Image: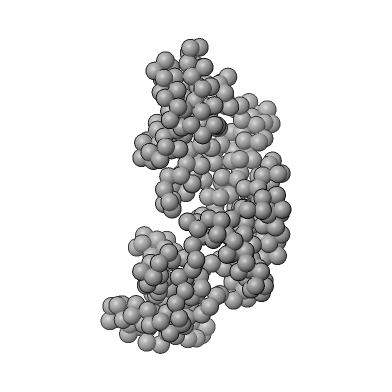
Length: 368
């Protein structure tokens, strides 16, 4: 880095740390005017744009920076964090997959450097915060675990989060994510224990109250579960809105309307498929799969897909059914209109399974 750019890079870092992204952006851009190759300045510019809510510009800035400093661990971690948590309200699957790859790359480099494996240094060696070490490897494992959870791979996510816990033993984010992974794997007692550990250190952490409430619900402690869920809603109403609760008969009416909107040939195929509205998925059914199905699933198809019905396998001729889980659907939606739409999409998703479509095919059709 040009010597006269270093103080500006340090100023940008301090401004970001103190919560002043405007000053950080100004300092980073002044640093780049003096040394346009400074990976640290490019990184801080992208991070400042993200903090300012200028997300499209931040995305472009991260892509540009990665093209010039692809071995800089801090930049890789920052870009992964941006794609997972700041690129939009709900990151696209492609962003999550990209974030996972960035975090995995950062972890590989950080581990090699921490172990003295002689990985080539980043372009700006000597700049603030570029020396990767075991802590950076732990942060990479945490981000990769978060990405894997969003991609639905809870077993692999838990493995990465266990790695992160070893490097970052007191990190509450690691505990929160481990709790989520354990919950997804139907290990409810262990999930509850993780969330209780977080609340012991941070009593007003809404994610821990929400996670503990869900775990307690699965463990049959409805009263305490609702207390923690209500606490999460009070602490972070935008993140944990109250479920859109409607009477069972009205819910079933919405399902009937959604069925009526299906093409007539599909309705004909479904004439022998039972469609039931249920409260929550049963744990026994969840753990019958390996790995377990998520406790938060919105619906399920049971039985053999239609293309298999003509096979010689006698099991394929047992009746098929579709279950829609009312409580999970009500929690997923923010208002009644969204609930109606999600019931329709979930029904279409499970009908797709009945017709023989796999998850990738459903994703390509927008029914994931």
